[in-house]
Image 1 (cartoon, rainbow, N blue to C red):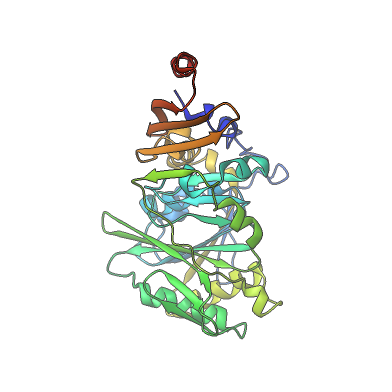
Image 2: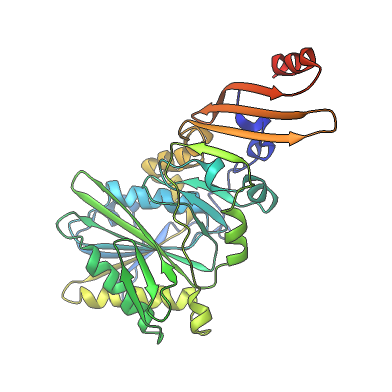
Length: 346
């Protein structure tokens, strides 16, 4: 039995597969690349396997494509030299690999506002993203990746817009003035490769962020990982001239300047590349799959109670991997046979 019986909107959440080809006015070109002032087109595998420093920019706002591309770059691209990947997403809640969406998200709000739910391959907490958010990813070999240096590039990018910022702990970057969070990060390491990815809040809908990450006041006891609710700030609050496009250009420049001794390959990608790379299709299919997004949910209990004029009803639901394993109904009703019939009908 699936949990859709308790949270009906899950049946439609993320069920529609967006168009791959023709998503950008029917444009057939796979992607474009440039080195210095030159511009070329070519085979995706060949381009991503070329040696050298790379900056990859996605023109898509489909979160399932964007994070699938990130996984493809992490596992298949030539990372003998550092790679920076920049991307933006339509409204989406991202949860960590071992998190419980029913605990982290207000599922009915996601359905009401057509907000995607996406489970990352990496850990970390639940975050809300929309087009007011810039995603950045640093990829490389383990020995190349230095979190402090990556954070330094983010801080330098922000400070180019006269906003003072500083890293705090290992994951976050905050405003120096009031310590409000403007960037959070997560990490992944596998087969000698390293992924350090995070966000920059520019003009995110913070009211929507608050509503989607605050579930109803129903008791959820979970073995998953709780998100840390942090005070956050949009960079546009501090400097209204900051835009996601401006930050994207500046971070790309800071990254290129850091590797000025090397030729930097610039690669721009759109969703049409998904039909041309089998590995990317595999990642995309997994990201969209209900079993991955909801079935990976840790074991948890869902308890809801309501007082009626004739009795109090308390429903306790046990779930594993997003599926209901047991339901019990407790009540002080004077009609126990009715309660038993109700339980048997579930």
